Length: 141
Image (cartoon, rainbow, N blue to C red; front, side, top):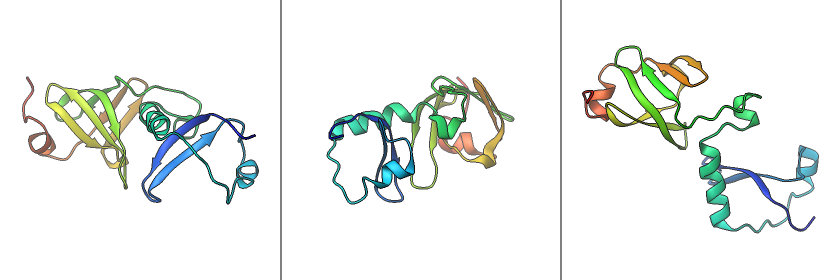
């Protein structure tokens, strides 16, 4: 096949590139046939796919739930309602949840250490003391 669609794209900061999944390439064996070949892709389409996929789980990161993260509520055990997920930034070590709510726009590292409970529609966190004061407005509106 000379032309195909990109079905998934995500940043791969460790290798300074973009990991992509191609329509019709479903296994490692099929992908290995592409080793050593050139892939030409429109950068705007790849960037759009990365942005689109950063706000939703794909099959590997969410199991079979297919849960959308956009608008998910974030609660902290000490601070209470932090707001709803607005975006996800990707970084070299971990993703960052961008949460917009009563404490302003917070950028929270998406690390297991902070997660107390994760359920559909809501994530409960236990942020370190002073986190809101340092990263947000420091008070609820």
